[in-house]
Length: 336
Image 1 (tube, one colour):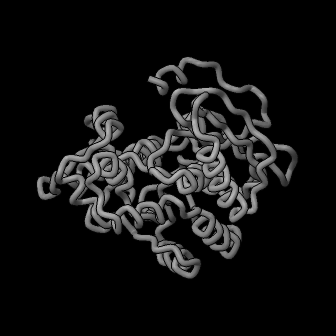
Image 2 (spheres, one colour):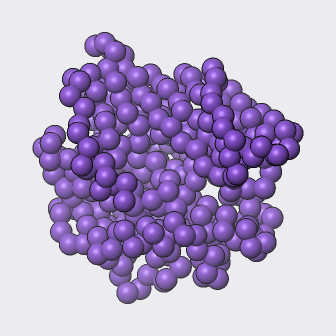
């Protein structure tokens, strides 16, 4: 629904707006001068884990992720809090402490925020970062032949749903929390170093982070192109066996612990996606699974594919090559 509403709204006419909401990018970018721009984003949600301190950390990592996906450096944040009038203050304190710990890790200063009384707990941040105007990564710009790289495992949605049903193994939950709490900073820094070493070449053609629309939903945005910038659409081929999945995620999907967002993603994408007959149903579901604080999906020029994986590995990021871009066809996304 939001997608159709946004299409009807007037576009920004300020020439300093380098990235607006036209292509559903991860964050907005506003140019301050020839060598500096602001990159801004906001994100908040209800608890997906029981421990309030952990929830604060995950919410912070998730909010910071959009800045990293654009290639920016987060510098400041404003907290957004919804909390019940009769809620326990110690719970709110632990949420805020968890968020602050992760923001401190990112060297991002929390300078204020806003809170409201709300029946459900909600928490997140509006984050501001800095970026060079000529080094912005968009979620569009994929070229035919580009290598697709994914930096984190999938499965946080089905595992969170299993947790709500008391069906998640403690070790599986620990792995999911570790993934959701991990900043995408190392991956972003690795790609920036690769970009600097490439000098005038452009090894990174598009980047996005995998969140609520799932891998396939965000891959669709990358494939659509941008006619206003003369970026042609492509199709993406994805190898489901090349993707990492969180421990317990395949079992959770097989047992039907499917979040509502997964079903919405599947309905929205419709015939944009084609699955080979050999792909088991649980992997259909996992590729539609909405992620919290997921990894980066990167389109890399084919001649830099190995260099990108090596750079990510050097920074401790276990990235995988999961597919390739091909000339536009139907379906837009094919899974093998």
